[in-house]
Length: 363
Image 1: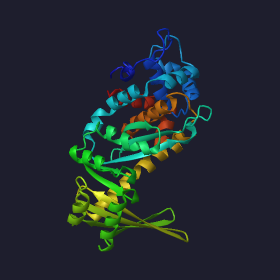
Image 2 (image 1 turned 180 degrees about the horizontal axis):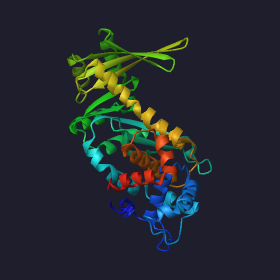
Image 3 (image 1 turned 60 degrees about the vertical axis):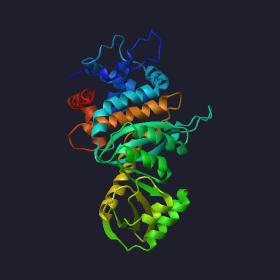
Image 4 (image 1 turned 30 degrees about the vertical axis):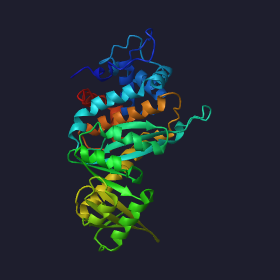
């Protein structure tokens, strides 16, 4: 097994030359702490103190366990771009081999706002490999609208051959569609009235189409049906709009029954691949996995939305550390929820060791 800290060994240290604790060892302790349930820098210091004999099996720790101030100071000043570059190095072999659906979506860390410094909450945009359930990259943006410029930069880091990129209506942009097709991928982009003329024409086309196929799901006291339609005869639409790579348009009508309440909504999609209605339902459901399997886990299991780290680069770096921990736990082959894996790592040194070995193999 490669040295467990090698993935962090060449990160630029934001501290002076008289720093007492090695940067790679501090980051390794922080990662292990998050894997075992730590939520903040105080937890990281407590974890280190509790697990010092275990940690000394891998680390030198010439000055013992860092304090919570040391953890906080490092994450506050660590260059987030350099940290993200290392994250991409960890995930590079998975990014090159990703298949299926890659979902694009943003998330705001509600408690990261700094009222005293007039700093808005941190907003992150992430790429999520729906089939592998892995985070492939993230970018911090000043505002939600800035996702439009961040996403193309993230997608450049992936091999999109055999991949379908899904995104909400904000990313229904010609430039992004062109980039995805040029990189060998396909797209399924929601279209709304931010593209008014295009949306009206797609909606008109769908009004003349048949009802489509219906898929029904039930559970937890609710019944959901999805009626999907795909149209491939789009010559006149392309003549009017010249949308890059467009091969079909789709519509999904969702009907949800819960107790005595019934709700219905209709969504329209631009497709660069001719797919069946059944496949369109599958792709759009996989897109929302980024909410159910990533954002929900980060907020409920890792308490990300309650994190009050606000200063400097701390919120962004800690957010990336959580995603790295999530990937490491997901790649560990045993079955179980993220909550269960983190508890097991905290209680069982052998299981934590298996996660450490998984992390060391990412290099």
